[in-house]
Image (tube, rainbow, N blue to C red; front, side, top):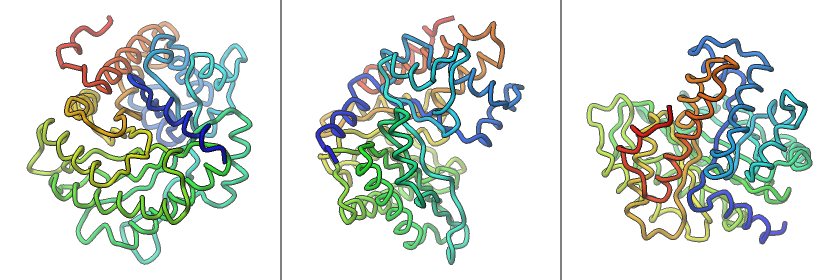
Length: 342
């Protein structure tokens, strides 16, 4: 492992004003997204949609530091035969790869999940590195509900995340460590804080046990938010303050940066929360975005599978990328949303 090189890539992933595009939806997930806009989820349509984003020159070169790809996408070529990985590299962005294989029920823990994919991961990482991937992503899912999460679920998922991260660094790939506490329940913001603190502390303990170099990784956590069904929602400022307080208590300063998941927030909510955190400032690491839906919902709708709409889709993608770039510097305001490109 060359830690200096890993650190260099990790720092580039969280460079000021830049964030990560999570374009790693599974075939099942992107089918659901395409169903909403009336587009058939064929291999070519998935390729065309992602190529549209990767060819958005302004967005990719100025606001997007890296792209998380799905296994199908990392091997695909653009319509003109150029490998999609090359399009990302030519824009000055870093190709990455989602390496987990989804979730399955955790034995003995009803309603809880464990992420699969550690088997043969070392061999897969070597192939992905050869294909151009310089970072990877693994998502652990922690749900909040009656009697959960259990210690078993938190510990088991933290252990798997740490083993994945160690294998990545051995393969000279920067791991994005993503322990996601879901926002699906009716819990309040304080319950989210409590569970996320538990999850992050266990995760960093396991990373230490697995000898993961913190300087060569990126953390991708959830924000501290109430559940979607909670009777008591929180203000932007409360989310920002509680998230920053939590991160200061749990994340070592050696970590180069934190790139949040949007986790089901709306486009503007995810942007506003990130901006409010960066306005607080005084943090040992950069706070940026690693958004999927919060970057893609608008361009998907604008594109709607039509060649004539590619420019409109790219304009929508560039706008959301720019808004989040400003938020990562604490320079966003809601008034800028109305200045969206036509």
